[in-house]
Length: 102
Image 1 (cartoon, one colour):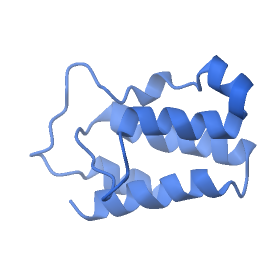
Image 2 (cartoon, rainbow, N blue to C red):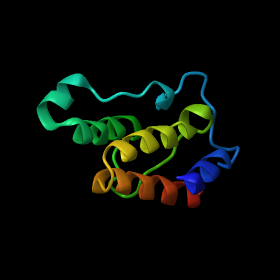
Image 3 (cartoon, helix red, strand yellow):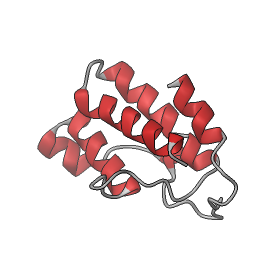
Image 4 (cartoon, rainbow, N blue to C red):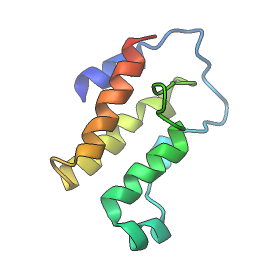
């Protein structure tokens, strides 16, 4: 996660820092209805899908700045709560690969 944080802080300047983030990771919580339906870890996965969009064809990072970097805190929180969760580990890998590719 430390490596991911560094990559997100170093995203290229041609990626915009929006006035209002669509990611909004500093204000992250899984949807309560999804949590009740599919469980908390799966609801976190679903919320990440909503905020980042589809990973089909590779995850695309479309903004940079504090709200994008805050995804590391989100992952850290939920990986601690659900260690070994393959979906959360996959998100970490996919976001890192997307950041490396920029």
